[in-house]
Length: 240
Image (cartoon, rainbow, N blue to C red; front, side, top):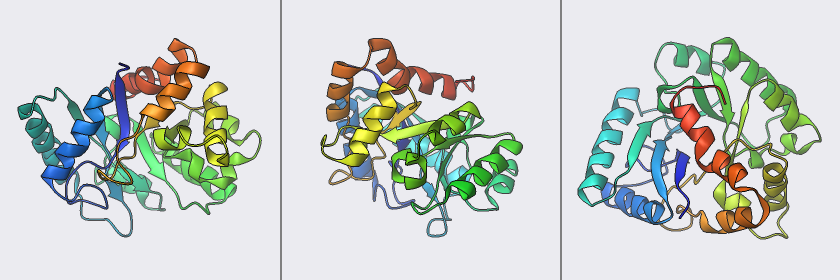
């Protein structure tokens, strides 16, 4: 079984549109654990819709969910983080400690509306980097502006990381988004993979299809980097 570090998840109960209670959180963790997930960064949403998750509350829930999982035999580590919908105030809130980075590192999981323009996205990541953060583009496959030739390269040349969802990479070959994700993986332009799990139903942790495809098309080293190695460096706050 492949060991996985999940860098994008919504497993903390009652904070956003993810897990609704502790029982659902534990069932999501059981599903992920059976697929090889051993470390998770909890990334509840911060957006106009979800503003109530203070850093202190996120940290407390991480400890509670981790302890509950351990009591059920799952040796799993949960780190605090947030998935931040970019706004002009995001950099200041991060600097003031009012928003969380990923596992208390310099790396920040940032998302945008799918309609974001290339110029707006560039300006956003520049602002975050000027504040000392390293942006990680959450589920990068969702932004049509990044499909243009060379744009992913521009971001990565600036030190920005690209995160894709397992479910997207493991989809049907006929799906354009799946083909794009696989192209990024084969060309070594994706840095991290995450489940983006929200529940035990239509947005459950689902890694098997993507892993099966990667086993057939990537090297073992390439797989290890996007599933585990780069995430280890992120958690250690090392350069990726």
